[in-house]
Image 1 (cartoon, helix red, strand yellow):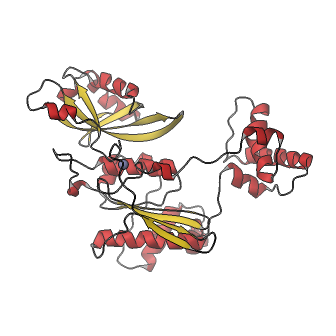
Image 2 (cartoon, rainbow, N blue to C red):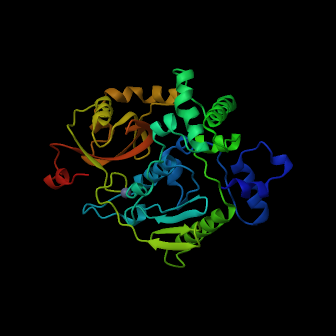
Image 3 (cartoon, helix red, strand yellow):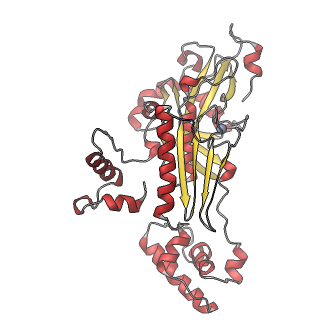
Length: 371
Ligand SMILES: [Zn+2]
């Protein structure tokens, strides 16, 4: 939820308390009969079972990585029947919204029906960076001077020490260097708050844009919950930069999506141990998931962390996966771990469709399915 709105709720006694707790308390005071349970932690800290208890997931997230993660969690509950049609009772709808200054979007994601977040990941292109040569040789504005200090000068002076945007001393150092750079080239406008904005990619939040987008999200959530009306299909954009434009686009699913599709198909011999299976996931070209923890219908087969769970599940590593899956010839497993994609590491969850070879009941059709 947005800071300014929370500030409207805040009283002196609330200062220093988590936003989630304060917001929950204040909403319950204002709206009688509503029950809110706040959780103050990273979304990745909750296990998959936690999310299975919800009927609808309304997102209020600020990054692509976080959206990707929750999307994978919601899609992991989706099951397909033997004809690869999604089963309606396993769909967990999501409502997402986001704003950037005067622009915003709201969308409804019904896994298996609409495109999921990953199907349309191209809607969120990587942040455009300034060319390094411009920063190094021909800075033209204050942002160029700040990025020079942040991306080039910092490494020159602090070899091997990572810049931490949340460290006030680091930020002050970048600001001071940016001021020197700006003076050298006669460029005005470097301030401490601009330095923070450029380095952290902060785009000013506009409370009214947030209000429009969050109202759209709330309405769509109400429609899904009550069935009182047809939902938005499936992506609303709002643009208040030059005049006001809004539009609804019906994006289509990526039929090969690894997240909302039937799952990555993995064929195994019945003798493959859990340890060998985990190693395979790391090398699988479509998965690239390292340090994987494996769950099977909510049962922890192997957990990398916390240490107490790791110890409890460690003995499973040497057992055949086939036995751990109660000798079921084909079923869905979930793997959580570190995904290495484009030289970036992030937490991820993958749905895996495991089929054991040479077992009665597994037909050629199952093996030909693909992901
Ligand atoms: Zn998808």
